[in-house]
Image (cartoon, rainbow, N blue to C red):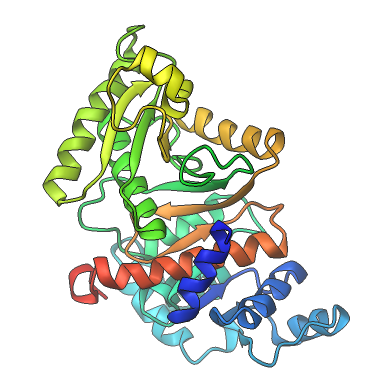
Amino acid sequence: MSFIETIFEKVRRHPKRVVFPDGELPRVIKAAELFYQSQLGIPILLGRREVIRELAEKDSINLDRVSIIEPENSSELPVFCRRLERIERYRKVDLKDSRELMVRPNYFAAMMVQYGLADALAGGVNASGGALLRPMLHLVKPLPFADVISSCTIVELHNRSYGDDGVLFFADTGVVPDPTMSQLATIAVQAGLLARQVFGRRPRIALLSFSTKGSARTASTEKVAGAVQLARHIAEKSGSDMAIDGEMQADAALESAFSEIKLGKSLVGGKANVLIFPDLNSGNIAVKLTKLFADSSTYGQIFMGFTRPAADLPRGASSEDILCTAAIVALQAIEYRKLYPPGDVGN
């Protein structure tokens, strides 16, 4: 059974409601149909009902079990506007302006997941990354222990000898350009928690650099080395069982032969399943190159640090990509209830 098939099997036991803010795109409409047909739960498309139905009819897509919400005509819109106006940064916004903001699909979807009208969100297909991140930052509460919001891309390789049967978690791949030592440590722990949510196994986290254990000393390598110690402290304090090591080069993280030479004894070296990059440049480049050169499947970016699960999909995502990423955030919704009960994270 492939990685994504195991995700589907888990979600089928606890189906979820996933909202898709880019509801007027044919590939998103198709993904919604597949989501229901795969017995993963109820897909919710945001957009003009007439436009969505015309596009579905043109592509012979069955919308019988797909929910469609028009933000402008939703009974929830006045409630969402009032909630928006109570948020500190929007208190001076009048009713007309709050309505104009809340009818935007990304804002409406973010409000839906924050207040429990959807269990997870999968968007970003129709805009640049900041278009979805911004409403998430403004409307969705962060986890109480998260001092940074970041993202993770799940990579599934054909070569099953790496990671967990070919599956690796890359972070941060889309949010924090140049993380501080503290932020890098938090990103490492967040990615480890995501890996545990998805796999249920102990994360083996490698903080990557161009040096291994002080083979080169620069401000960058010392930042990574310091982040290792901080990440271990955060994990221990929060009671999270994860192996964390670094700084190390990518070959030492993934190949046992190099790990033995460069690291010696390590719980992570040669068998890492979570790779933490020193900055956004390296993380994003690594994902793109891995997808192109290794012909791998990539899922995400999965946002980390929010109290509600959400993913920011690349603009080139196919219906299958959207479906698979929606299944992952649906699985997160199951695990979020276990890790962060509603009373703990607020409503």
